[in-house]
Length: 341
Ligand code: CP
Image 1 (spheres, rainbow, N blue to C red):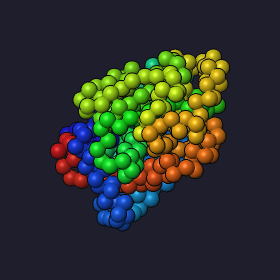
Image 2: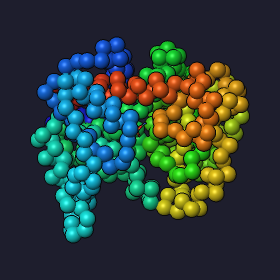
Image 3: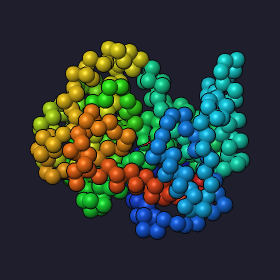
């Protein structure tokens, strides 16, 4: 029997995503439930978090369940992921045991595992969460690896709250924005996937072609756009990309060709600090909504004026993490979900 996981929205049919969003809206109206009564989830954080940890822990509690937070390598043993490894280094136990033992204790496993930022050809395999999914006998939930599907659902839910459920042909700009460090492409990949999945006319605005996202996600986004009546374009021109936009979504990420040699990328990134989201750019739009996954460095990625404007729905999006994750957890523990029935 195959276990159904929530690793990427792309693996889930659109009607199932819509059902999760409907359930999330129910959870927003009525926060307390019993869907996880007697159930538990292990939340494994290989990287820091504020929103994800709080919303998963609280969400499990509000549905009658129990969340156990583990930080492998800090408060839990460091884990080996290589098959056939001679474990004479720093790792103390193998994923083959970790995932199977946890599966005997808990009903769900959540994993946050960012890229290592040294070699994208390695990071793009999403080896950590794929290994959990391989060995686990309970559903695994992606809490951000090289995509961030829970953020995607929270984002779409926020857009639907403000623009209505039919988002087709809305002009959506995913803009790269400056950050002093090279960051994960996960939220950018996810934004492309979900905005095209919901039929929006999506523009990826970034400094140069070097900041294009992995071809896997560019191709999925192109396919989604074709199947859902939207479009996908690329722009390096700030003014034309912002003009008449209905939605501006900002994220910073490191350029994939520079993985492992970030000192060579830094001058390019530093030369594009003007990609900051500010009032002048937002004034070019069709009174666009602005959002960001958070955390956000104010006056680096977006100005105070944008963050404090009525157009900013980042707090709504963050709230929605709680509702959509409850919907995901509740769906995955339902009997009969094993084969995606
Ligand atoms: N957006 C998000 O995942 O926030 P955290 O990193 O705080 O969990």
